[in-house]
Image (cartoon, rainbow over all chains, first blue to last red; front, side, top):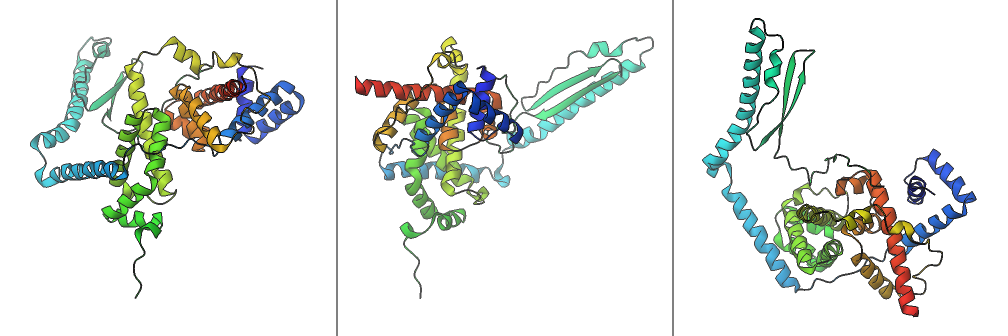
Length: 179
Length: 200
């Protein structure tokens, strides 16, 4: 059996196959002893693991464990309290202000440069000078798109600081399937 | 006049509502009730006591900070378990970035060795006491790569679907299926090898 078939058998055991495919796999399991053996092993592994998760008791006293959590919570709360809008630092204000401004400046720079180049008499390919735009901002990322046919140059800006790792809605980019 | 019930008899939901209003005593009780489970999940993923303590404590701190976001769609302990899993996955990703990917590791992900393993027909856990079975599962989990261990934990213990595992492990569904298949094959064969050890 090839890997694709093996993974389909597993998906069937786990109830992850759409109905049509599930019927095909069920028929294969009926007729193919090798497929049946793989299914038996998968079910066996699932059965002995289910509900038999190893237990581990905390290796330190509950009081000590809690005291560290409590201290961390108090520390975080104190830090959050110092960062209220009334006492926010100038650096933070500047950073918050400069991040979008730097993005806008970048767009303005590209736009003005493009217009100047378009107006230059005799310039056959004005956008050839715009193959590289440097983004020096730590907080703003950029993706550029250039179309010679449309005489168009677009810079898309996005916020690099966005926390995606714990975002419930975050959909990761696929990476190649390991087979 | 009705008196307030003693804290140990109060259900989680009530304690959560109290903690959401800032009641630290209620939160301490929740920590006391579920600390072993949250620690055990961190330990099963990290296989290291120190990391498991640190990450489980960090999870409780995050839990407190995000308590207002908890809507009660799942149980409180399930919600906390998801937090500690995310922290463990973050930590494992950091470790992975720091070390070079070895050829052995890549082969393991691709099922290099597991492809050759014979398919088991006899259940290697038959007749085992639950305590012994758990000990063997623990031992076998310790012998898996963290990718194989994680995918097994998320599927077999957390009952997550392929799509949800892929989202949490930041990989494709195909990768999850492949890892899960070879992790199961390895798990079954490790359990069979412990059975052989026992008989020899």
